Image (cartoon, rainbow, N blue to C red; front, side, top):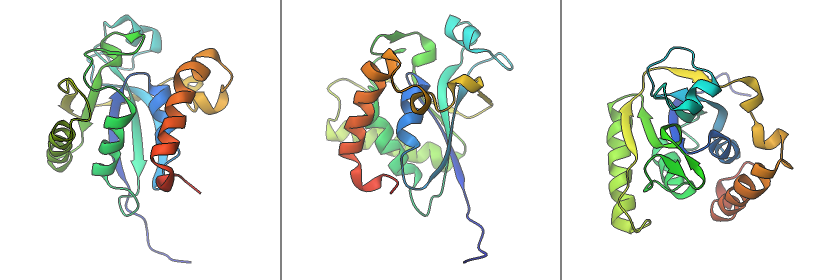
Length: 183
């Protein structure tokens, strides 16, 4: 047993409904914690109802605490660009509004540069037929969502939204990134 302290890092990403991103990122090796919440807006301590109104400017995001010696930020972003459509402005499928925008909130200049490089890489690869509209913005404040939003898919797998929207995304992710899943 080692006395070495792990150095953890944080990523803050939004790609539609936070339930989908949380369900996926929580299954990855090296991810220590995923918290659903709100960021990128101008109202302090917003509620879900306020964020859904579109008036607070916040996006539904996940804050991912991860071990960069197991999974790095670049890989988190590569996965990000395959699990949501970064080419639709303020929407993911039937979820419409600025709170569902594709957004990367970088915590430092290294994350910003990495995000720019990955967006360029994804564009070059032609992963998406339309241009990426993901917002790239400095991280400011993260507000955890209400408790009932945390681990939503894990706690409500039979809920219709979970079965119709989240489960297929998780299944596709598991197939594509099988070797990166927790054992």
